Image 1 (cartoon, helix red, strand yellow):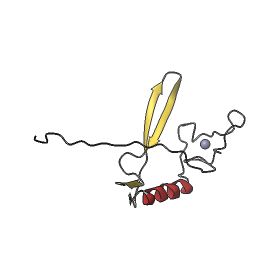
Image 2 (cartoon, protein in one colour; image 1 turned 90 degrees about the vertical axis):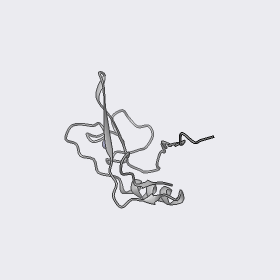
Image 3 (spheres, protein in one colour; image 1 turned 120 degrees about the vertical axis):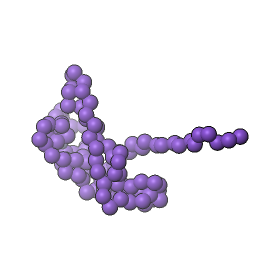
Length: 105
Ligand SMILES: [Zn+2]
């Protein structure tokens, strides 16, 4: 039997990190709270609001990468994907597709 195809399986893993603030701003990650108290122009996706990466997130990501035998990158990049929905045209998701913090684990 000839091997005409190679099976390649990719995993997309989502985790919730135990940081006190969100990944790209200083807003609290505490559960609950009054409406609109854990949001700012950055996490609301307002035009011109610039994100600042949470150092603790990078440290956690590197620790998980080392624990899973990943290669830790010296340079990483985040990619922002915008979604247009009529009721919320500023929807977006930030991921690391091309230059992740760690890979090949
Ligand atoms: Zn925020």
